[in-house]
Image (tube, rainbow, N blue to C red):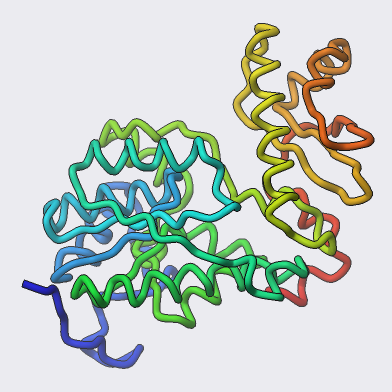
Length: 306
Protein backbone atom coordinates (compact mmCIF):
# COMPACT_ATOMS: atom_id res chain seq x y z
CA UNK A 1 0.00 0.00 0.00
CA UNK A 2 1.37 3.46 -0.85
CA UNK A 3 2.50 5.54 2.09
CA UNK A 4 0.70 8.82 2.55
CA UNK A 5 0.26 11.42 5.20
CA UNK A 6 -1.84 14.41 6.04
CA UNK A 7 -0.07 17.59 4.90
CA UNK A 8 1.72 19.47 7.65
CA UNK A 9 -0.05 22.47 9.13
CA UNK A 10 1.51 25.88 8.56
CA UNK A 11 4.67 26.61 10.50
CA UNK A 12 3.92 28.11 13.87
CA UNK A 13 0.46 26.55 14.27
CA UNK A 14 -0.19 24.59 17.49
CA UNK A 15 -0.18 21.20 15.76
CA UNK A 16 3.23 21.91 14.23
CA UNK A 17 4.88 21.54 17.63
CA UNK A 18 6.59 18.28 16.69
CA UNK A 19 8.85 20.19 14.27
CA UNK A 20 10.74 22.79 16.28
CA UNK A 21 13.63 24.77 14.89
CA UNK A 22 17.16 24.58 16.26
CA UNK A 23 16.77 27.54 18.59
CA UNK A 24 13.78 25.95 20.31
CA UNK A 25 15.92 22.90 21.10
CA UNK A 26 18.59 24.74 23.08
CA UNK A 27 17.26 23.11 26.25
CA UNK A 28 17.91 19.66 24.77
CA UNK A 29 21.31 19.23 26.33
CA UNK A 30 22.36 15.59 25.96
CA UNK A 31 22.94 13.34 23.00
CA UNK A 32 20.26 11.00 24.34
CA UNK A 33 17.79 13.90 24.37
CA UNK A 34 18.64 14.91 20.83
CA UNK A 35 18.41 11.35 19.53
CA UNK A 36 15.02 11.09 21.21
CA UNK A 37 14.01 14.29 19.43
CA UNK A 38 15.23 12.82 16.15
CA UNK A 39 13.16 9.70 16.74
CA UNK A 40 10.15 11.89 17.49
CA UNK A 41 10.62 13.68 14.16
CA UNK A 42 10.63 10.44 12.19
CA UNK A 43 8.34 8.04 14.05
CA UNK A 44 5.02 9.67 13.05
CA UNK A 45 5.79 9.41 9.32
CA UNK A 46 4.05 6.73 7.27
CA UNK A 47 7.19 6.49 5.15
CA UNK A 48 10.24 8.54 4.22
CA UNK A 49 12.71 8.92 1.37
CA UNK A 50 16.19 9.83 2.57
CA UNK A 51 18.49 11.72 0.20
CA UNK A 52 21.57 9.64 0.98
CA UNK A 53 24.82 11.07 -0.33
CA UNK A 54 27.00 8.37 1.17
CA UNK A 55 28.20 10.62 4.00
CA UNK A 56 27.82 10.23 7.73
CA UNK A 57 25.11 12.89 8.15
CA UNK A 58 22.58 11.42 5.74
CA UNK A 59 23.74 7.94 6.83
CA UNK A 60 22.68 8.67 10.40
CA UNK A 61 19.34 10.01 9.15
CA UNK A 62 18.87 6.78 7.21
CA UNK A 63 19.77 4.60 10.18
CA UNK A 64 17.52 6.65 12.47
CA UNK A 65 14.64 6.28 10.03
CA UNK A 66 15.08 2.51 10.02
CA UNK A 67 15.09 2.52 13.83
CA UNK A 68 11.92 4.60 13.91
CA UNK A 69 9.97 3.08 11.02
CA UNK A 70 11.50 -0.28 10.10
CA UNK A 71 13.06 -1.20 6.78
CA UNK A 72 9.82 -1.51 4.81
CA UNK A 73 8.85 2.15 5.23
CA UNK A 74 12.23 3.70 4.40
CA UNK A 75 13.80 4.30 0.99
CA UNK A 76 17.31 5.61 0.40
CA UNK A 77 17.99 7.60 -2.76
CA UNK A 78 21.50 8.33 -4.00
CA UNK A 79 21.71 10.65 -7.00
CA UNK A 80 24.02 9.47 -9.76
CA UNK A 81 25.80 12.14 -11.78
CA UNK A 82 29.31 13.17 -12.85
CA UNK A 83 29.66 15.09 -9.56
CA UNK A 84 29.56 11.88 -7.47
CA UNK A 85 32.81 9.87 -7.43
CA UNK A 86 32.36 6.24 -8.42
CA UNK A 87 33.94 5.08 -5.17
CA UNK A 88 31.38 7.05 -3.17
CA UNK A 89 28.51 5.48 -5.11
CA UNK A 90 29.79 1.97 -4.43
CA UNK A 91 30.27 2.68 -0.73
CA UNK A 92 26.78 4.19 -0.49
CA UNK A 93 25.24 1.09 -2.04
CA UNK A 94 27.08 -1.17 0.39
CA UNK A 95 25.90 0.85 3.40
CA UNK A 96 22.27 0.86 2.29
CA UNK A 97 22.43 -2.89 1.67
CA UNK A 98 23.75 -3.38 5.21
CA UNK A 99 20.61 -1.68 6.57
CA UNK A 100 18.32 -3.77 4.40
CA UNK A 101 16.35 -0.91 2.84
CA UNK A 102 15.40 -0.20 -0.73
CA UNK A 103 17.99 1.83 -2.62
CA UNK A 104 17.04 4.02 -5.54
CA UNK A 105 19.84 5.52 -7.65
CA UNK A 106 18.17 8.06 -9.95
CA UNK A 107 20.20 10.08 -12.39
CA UNK A 108 20.34 13.82 -11.90
CA UNK A 109 21.43 16.29 -14.55
CA UNK A 110 22.68 19.35 -12.73
CA UNK A 111 24.96 20.06 -15.70
CA UNK A 112 21.84 20.94 -17.69
CA UNK A 113 21.32 23.93 -15.38
CA UNK A 114 23.10 27.05 -16.55
CA UNK A 115 23.57 28.34 -13.01
CA UNK A 116 25.36 25.15 -12.01
CA UNK A 117 27.68 25.22 -15.02
CA UNK A 118 28.43 28.93 -14.47
CA UNK A 119 29.75 28.04 -11.00
CA UNK A 120 29.08 31.27 -9.16
CA UNK A 121 28.77 31.33 -5.37
CA UNK A 122 25.23 29.97 -5.58
CA UNK A 123 26.18 26.84 -7.54
CA UNK A 124 25.00 24.56 -4.73
CA UNK A 125 21.49 25.99 -5.00
CA UNK A 126 21.19 24.70 -8.57
CA UNK A 127 22.59 21.32 -7.58
CA UNK A 128 20.18 20.89 -4.66
CA UNK A 129 17.28 22.15 -6.79
CA UNK A 130 18.00 19.45 -9.35
CA UNK A 131 18.30 16.82 -6.61
CA UNK A 132 15.01 17.63 -4.92
CA UNK A 133 13.23 18.10 -8.25
CA UNK A 134 14.24 14.53 -9.11
CA UNK A 135 13.60 12.97 -5.69
CA UNK A 136 10.19 14.53 -5.04
CA UNK A 137 8.41 12.86 -7.97
CA UNK A 138 10.31 9.64 -7.23
CA UNK A 139 8.98 9.72 -3.68
CA UNK A 140 5.48 10.48 -4.97
CA UNK A 141 5.59 7.44 -7.27
CA UNK A 142 6.43 5.35 -4.21
CA UNK A 143 3.60 6.92 -2.24
CA UNK A 144 5.95 8.82 0.07
CA UNK A 145 5.28 12.43 1.03
CA UNK A 146 8.47 13.22 2.95
CA UNK A 147 11.90 13.78 1.39
CA UNK A 148 14.59 14.42 4.01
CA UNK A 149 18.25 15.43 3.86
CA UNK A 150 21.32 15.14 6.09
CA UNK A 151 21.63 18.83 6.96
CA UNK A 152 22.58 19.18 10.62
CA UNK A 153 22.25 22.00 13.15
CA UNK A 154 25.82 23.24 12.57
CA UNK A 155 25.14 23.50 8.85
CA UNK A 156 22.27 25.91 9.50
CA UNK A 157 24.49 28.12 11.64
CA UNK A 158 27.35 28.17 9.14
CA UNK A 159 25.79 30.99 7.13
CA UNK A 160 27.08 30.11 3.65
CA UNK A 161 24.64 27.42 2.55
CA UNK A 162 22.68 28.33 -0.62
CA UNK A 163 21.99 24.64 -1.27
CA UNK A 164 20.21 24.18 2.05
CA UNK A 165 17.91 27.06 1.28
CA UNK A 166 17.10 25.70 -2.18
CA UNK A 167 16.25 22.25 -0.81
CA UNK A 168 13.99 23.71 1.87
CA UNK A 169 12.18 25.89 -0.65
CA UNK A 170 11.28 22.72 -2.55
CA UNK A 171 9.86 20.98 0.48
CA UNK A 172 12.74 18.76 1.62
CA UNK A 173 13.40 18.95 5.34
CA UNK A 174 16.21 18.12 7.72
CA UNK A 175 15.49 15.86 10.72
CA UNK A 176 18.99 16.29 12.22
CA UNK A 177 18.71 20.07 12.23
CA UNK A 178 15.20 20.01 13.65
CA UNK A 179 16.35 17.71 16.44
CA UNK A 180 19.31 19.99 17.16
CA UNK A 181 22.04 17.45 16.32
CA UNK A 182 25.44 18.99 15.59
CA UNK A 183 28.26 17.51 13.51
CA UNK A 184 29.84 16.06 16.65
CA UNK A 185 26.49 14.60 17.71
CA UNK A 186 26.12 12.89 14.35
CA UNK A 187 29.56 11.27 14.65
CA UNK A 188 28.79 10.21 18.21
CA UNK A 189 25.46 8.68 17.16
CA UNK A 190 27.12 6.80 14.31
CA UNK A 191 29.68 5.34 16.71
CA UNK A 192 27.02 4.44 19.25
CA UNK A 193 25.07 2.62 16.56
CA UNK A 194 28.29 1.06 15.21
CA UNK A 195 27.71 2.38 11.70
CA UNK A 196 30.63 1.66 9.34
CA UNK A 197 30.73 5.29 8.20
CA UNK A 198 31.11 6.69 11.72
CA UNK A 199 34.62 7.97 11.03
CA UNK A 200 34.26 8.48 7.30
CA UNK A 201 35.89 11.74 6.16
CA UNK A 202 33.65 14.44 4.72
CA UNK A 203 33.29 14.03 0.97
CA UNK A 204 31.66 16.97 -0.76
CA UNK A 205 30.65 16.70 -4.40
CA UNK A 206 33.37 17.00 -7.05
CA UNK A 207 32.10 20.41 -8.16
CA UNK A 208 33.23 21.81 -4.81
CA UNK A 209 36.82 21.28 -5.99
CA UNK A 210 36.42 23.73 -8.86
CA UNK A 211 37.07 27.39 -8.10
CA UNK A 212 34.05 29.68 -8.35
CA UNK A 213 33.94 31.31 -11.76
CA UNK A 214 35.62 28.36 -13.50
CA UNK A 215 32.86 26.68 -15.55
CA UNK A 216 31.85 23.20 -14.42
CA UNK A 217 31.83 20.47 -17.05
CA UNK A 218 31.71 16.68 -17.06
CA UNK A 219 35.31 16.65 -18.27
CA UNK A 220 36.44 18.98 -15.49
CA UNK A 221 34.75 16.86 -12.84
CA UNK A 222 36.34 13.70 -14.22
CA UNK A 223 39.76 15.36 -14.26
CA UNK A 224 39.49 16.20 -10.57
CA UNK A 225 38.20 12.73 -9.67
CA UNK A 226 41.02 11.02 -11.56
CA UNK A 227 43.64 13.29 -9.98
CA UNK A 228 42.40 12.63 -6.46
CA UNK A 229 42.23 8.88 -7.03
CA UNK A 230 45.75 8.82 -8.45
CA UNK A 231 47.17 10.94 -5.63
CA UNK A 232 45.54 8.86 -2.90
CA UNK A 233 46.91 5.70 -4.51
CA UNK A 234 50.41 7.23 -4.72
CA UNK A 235 50.31 8.24 -1.07
CA UNK A 236 49.27 4.76 0.02
CA UNK A 237 52.04 3.19 -2.04
CA UNK A 238 54.52 5.58 -0.44
CA UNK A 239 53.40 4.43 2.99
CA UNK A 240 51.72 7.75 3.81
CA UNK A 241 48.33 7.44 5.45
CA UNK A 242 45.97 10.21 4.39
CA UNK A 243 42.50 11.00 5.65
CA UNK A 244 41.43 14.21 3.93
CA UNK A 245 42.59 14.96 0.41
CA UNK A 246 41.43 17.39 -2.25
CA UNK A 247 42.70 18.41 -5.68
CA UNK A 248 41.31 21.90 -6.31
CA UNK A 249 40.98 23.18 -9.87
CA UNK A 250 41.93 26.85 -9.69
CA UNK A 251 41.44 27.46 -13.39
CA UNK A 252 44.08 28.06 -16.03
CA UNK A 253 45.17 24.41 -15.75
CA UNK A 254 46.46 25.02 -12.21
CA UNK A 255 45.68 22.53 -9.45
CA UNK A 256 46.10 23.02 -5.71
CA UNK A 257 46.53 19.95 -3.55
CA UNK A 258 45.23 19.93 0.01
CA UNK A 259 46.10 17.06 2.36
CA UNK A 260 46.17 16.54 6.11
CA UNK A 261 48.46 19.22 7.55
CA UNK A 262 51.06 16.75 8.91
CA UNK A 263 51.61 15.41 5.37
CA UNK A 264 52.30 18.75 3.69
CA UNK A 265 56.05 18.80 4.37
CA UNK A 266 56.39 15.12 3.50
CA UNK A 267 54.77 15.61 0.10
CA UNK A 268 57.17 18.47 -0.51
CA UNK A 269 60.01 15.99 -0.06
CA UNK A 270 58.37 13.42 -2.34
CA UNK A 271 58.01 14.92 -5.83
CA UNK A 272 57.23 11.48 -7.24
CA UNK A 273 54.05 11.43 -5.13
CA UNK A 274 52.87 14.80 -6.38
CA UNK A 275 53.67 13.70 -9.94
CA UNK A 276 50.68 11.37 -9.71
CA UNK A 277 48.43 14.41 -10.22
CA UNK A 278 48.14 14.66 -13.99
CA UNK A 279 45.90 16.63 -16.33
CA UNK A 280 47.09 20.04 -15.11
CA UNK A 281 49.96 22.22 -16.33
CA UNK A 282 50.93 23.17 -12.79
CA UNK A 283 50.32 21.48 -9.44
CA UNK A 284 50.99 23.23 -6.14
CA UNK A 285 50.57 22.13 -2.53
CA UNK A 286 48.63 24.31 -0.12
CA UNK A 287 50.96 24.86 2.86
CA UNK A 288 47.97 25.22 5.20
CA UNK A 289 46.78 21.69 4.51
CA UNK A 290 43.21 20.49 4.03
CA UNK A 291 40.42 22.90 4.93
CA UNK A 292 36.80 22.04 4.32
CA UNK A 293 35.14 24.65 2.13
CA UNK A 294 38.39 26.43 1.34
CA UNK A 295 37.05 27.53 -2.06
CA UNK A 296 34.64 29.80 -0.21
CA UNK A 297 37.67 31.83 0.91
CA UNK A 298 38.10 32.92 -2.70
CA UNK A 299 34.62 34.40 -3.04
CA UNK A 300 34.79 38.23 -3.25
CA UNK A 301 31.36 38.64 -1.62
CA UNK A 302 30.26 35.47 0.25
CA UNK A 303 27.55 37.33 2.19
CA UNK A 304 25.67 37.75 -1.09
CA UNK A 305 24.97 34.02 -1.22
CA UNK A 306 23.82 33.45 2.35
